[in-house]
Image (cartoon, rainbow, N blue to C red; front, side, top):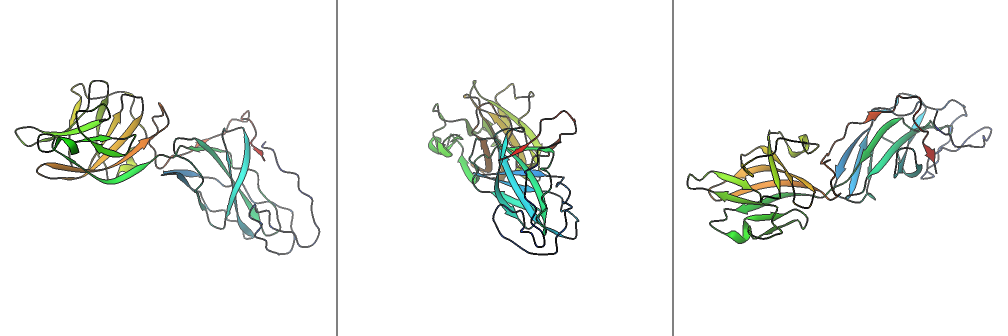
Length: 271
């Protein structure tokens, strides 16, 4: 059973238990809503979006959103939402956050915190990067994910570079201390949520195909993903996302939660 906050019950009309102090008044009852379920997170650039299944209580007033640095740590309320969605604009890239949501009604009754283990690590992303065949323009053939910029292909900063051989087939190439893997066709870059554990290209390259998403394991133990959006005679255009947390394979934009069904799971504590 998760820890509940002690609240004084005020007879008659009670204020909403919302952490933004946006109050409403209705006839009092003492039955709290059910804790929200079905929570999923979406990694953004210096932000995290949360979505969940809408509660069905007729007197539902809204939701409180809590965050912690660990599942069983102290949870601090960071905002209130009237709908089953919230964006944490205070999240920072490379930092992992644990989230919980409660529901409250117009009588001020607040539910327990949600039990699902929902965590997220925001990461930077970019769109429309254009690399040039290194034989045509070597200064615009490489990409440095950690600096978010195009670089000369033959530098220590280049995590990948573009090369087109005599048959004009475009290849993404990595150095010996870096790995790359073609994850196949995806409808968008969001479909690849985590770097694979194996299957890396033994030749240290992969054909650049429009619509395909690739994962890169950099020389300094970071993970990135790119999705090709256009291929032309001497250029390839792609979107990208990069995990700044060292060794963290999660490139997710939408993380499905794990359920804390074990009765022995530690209680979440509101701050």
